[in-house]
Structure formats: structure tokens, C-alpha cells
Length: 134
Image: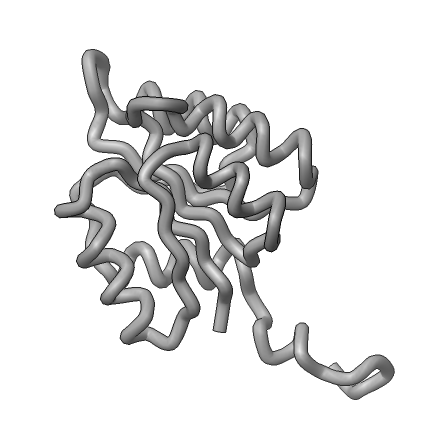
């Protein structure tokens, strides 16, 4: 399964999402802001980063840009409930900055798991030895 970095400043969002992803078999670390997320990713890159967009310390859009500068192949799923403007606007901007998938809050666990499968397909094929049949 995927190693996921979950970034959200809201404990009431982050904790249940983390538990649901772990129940689905993923290894999940968490960060409560973008600065901590970028530092964690630099120490130990993740298969997928799921990041909120509206956060104190460092918002998700800046986080996506920094992660992409560090690793142009980073897989990002942006999540947002909006803020002063509609969530759709933030999510569209996140997509233009390199998020492969976006989800508006509230989203279901199944929607998030499907987004993870889309950005990180083939965990099984990634673990095959070189030269193994596809």
C-alpha cells in the first residue's frame, strides 16, 4: 500500500481521515501545516501527499509549489472546503500548480481511496522484481 503524508490543520478532519486510510492498509504520517509537511517530505519522501489548501503557517498552494520544486514527480491530492472564496477556485488553482487530483470537502473515504489509486496505481507492479512479467 501507499506511504501517505496527510496535511491538514484541522484535527477533526485529519484524525478520522488518517484512521480510515490506515484501516485501508496505508501507512500514514501527518502534518498540521505546510511547513512541517515539506520538512517531513524532504526527510523521507512519500508515495502520495494529501494536503488541505487553507492552513495557517503555510497554505497548501505554497506547499504544493515547494514540494514540486523539491521533487517534480511528487503525487499530490489537494483537498479543500474553501475559505473566503469557493473551494472550486482553490482546487482549480491547486491543479494548475501540480496537484494530480482534487477533492472538495466533505468527501467520502471511498472518494479519497479512489483518488489515491488514481495517482499511485500499481503498488503491486512497483514491487515486482526487474524483468518480471507485467
